[in-house]
Image 1 (cartoon, rainbow, N blue to C red):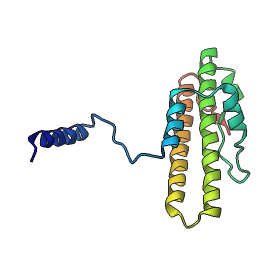
Image 2 (spheres, rainbow, N blue to C red):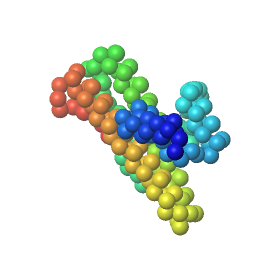
Image 3 (tube, helix red, strand yellow):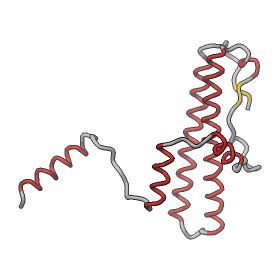
Image 4 (spheres, helix red, strand yellow):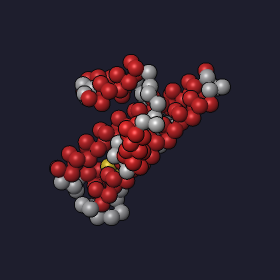
Length: 158
């Protein structure tokens, strides 16, 4: 047994136990990984983003999948800096909603065309569930930020 190899394996196990390096899953297809890496590195242009979001309208039978708007009574009471901050949060939440709608369309297509691929359907529905959880968290964060600045009793209009 190579002592160097044994030490390397031990150090790798210790590093993993200490969470010194992110744990990873299996690699994805190369071109798909390149696309994801490029999107992580650089933002989409505002026009490209608008075009992309315009492609994904809320399905008529999914009621709550939208970015909550602030009650106008509250909006008029908060500072300009708070309105600017919330407008940015709304923009981010709108992108999250758009991605959730795209995933819902993908799940619908999987159910119609690939019903036998239960793993694919599970992956897509897991992505939807995680994105919707993020949507809930974003809504709550916006409410908490506003709550600090306005009287209780007036919240988001849905």
